[in-house]
Amino acid sequence: MERATFPWWPLAFALLACLLPWMESAGNTLTLNLWDLAEWCSLNPHSQQAMVPLGASLGLRSLPLFLLALAVWRDDVPARLGLTLALLTAIAVLPPPEFLIADLANPNHRQLMATAILALCSGLAGRFRFTRLPLIRLTLAGASMAVAWAAFSAALDLHQGLGLEASPGPGFSLFLVAMLLLLLSGLQNIRATRTGPPRKVIFGS
Image (cartoon, helix red, strand yellow):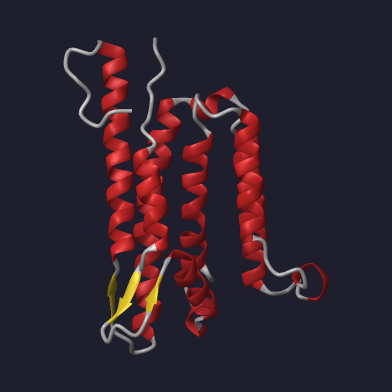
């Protein structure tokens, strides 16, 4: 059976969504993109008392890892390129250098370190055949939507816990739409590879 091909463009839209505001205040004085919102949640005093401490930050910080895995766990991405992208991502999310020396107890920095390690693991996992199965990528796309919804809801609760009014920004909505389109496109391509192409694929590859 021919391996289903997943399109690149939803990933590009999802990456753009990470840069756009995910949360906007009622007075338009606070606009936070994905990384800003994750950092803001980690510094929120209520975050430590949440059911999952720093859970909102962890969920938000994991979303770029989903995009990384969806990008490097592809048939058309060489393993060496995948490892390079994973290494660059890990370096980008590493905590400050002083964390390794004098701030080991900081849970926020521990989380950043864990995120960097997971990024490297994503690159290494791309060398195995099972990660390139279409079902794996469909699962990643669906899971990223669930994580994004849960993490943003937790971030919104933290914001409102301080008596501030906030609303979802365009980045959050665009991320969900991009992942939904990737999910639908993947399902359509899998169906086409199994039954043959009786009609043109709508989303393309």
